[in-house]
Image (tube, rainbow, N blue to C red; front, side, top):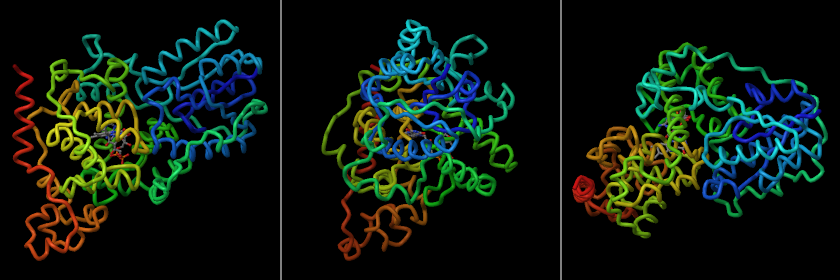
Length: 463
Ligand code: FAD
């Protein structure tokens, strides 16, 4: 019988256990379903959809070359997968396991519906090194703190070697109602994403090229360079990992093979991703509700104007504005600057972290429900292993420490480019005649005032 390979967030041929299992079962029908209904608010945002379009194009080409063309469908997977199984006579459906709460619930229902037509759904470990339901602390409970979690993963030993990509796959013709990629209508209607290709090549080949570029040279300096947004000191693998164009196991082994000094620091970052998924699995409320109950009473001051100034990169703090404009221009933001911009929105502007997370969701090519939600809660102080609330990043000092020469600010806030280095993170201190030549807003709130207000708001939670 033919077997269905249902691609979700594992858009690759190499190291894909679901693909290997489908091949072993019979001729393969690969399918991708755009199921926005099931995802609800967590359907891919604008930048994610841009990525998905190009990644599916790349996957479609690769599959065609192996002999098993990709079927593209749009609608409720809950109905479409059982119907497809029946129409092609498949008794097995294979897929990579997902952690997103809506996807887990959907998979339960699909497994039942398949059972009713004599077929099975098998989920494979595909996008994580350690499945969240398999790993437990010594006390037998899920982990709530990163460091013991990461130690437990390292203690598992090296992950298995990645599986090779099949060259030929016995396929079946695509389903008769298969759509063209354009019919999925994933690309933005305006020119917003035009600069994305300067930075990104979605797809399995693009991911492989990134790994090759990053290791081993960059890995050696990763420990030093990863905090400087002005240089390309990090791997840029996050969107490739999110869409599963490369598996964490492949990344892990590539880092090991590079044999460079930075590898453990780097692998620990890969484990932050794993930890976020662990949290999402065990605390499915993570994307919406603060994990620390007292934060439900946080006195947010929701203000559409402040939120918009932040989104547009018009806060008057150069490092914050550079970050927000990088996000808009290239669909991605450096990790250090994600922390600074998120802290600024939450603490200086007292806007709910959920509003910031929603903007990131729409504009990041690596928007990921686990990592995005866990990181926003971490910055807000409401997460399970969060930064202490009294740590209010000073956007001026952060800018000076991590972008002292202003390379990052000059790139994304070009109106400040002519300022000398010592003024680049504090343009309001420029002498009036110089200030007058620069069209850039004054700080939306003074740092000291913002900090005092944030501390007062957090103190009110204790009462
Ligand atoms: P590298 O430094 O090269 O790290 C390698 C990989 O490790 C990354 O690709 C990523 O998969 C993982 N990783 C690194 N840092 C983290 C982290 N703190 N948490 C989880 N995984 C990590 N990451 C996302 O993938 N999607 C998101 O939606 C997302 N939202 C974020 C929101 C906020 C407010 C913050 C502070 C961080 C967020 N991150 C998110 C984490 C991190 O910023 C990005 O993973 C990282 O910047 C990606 O760049 P890179 O691939 O060059 O990272």
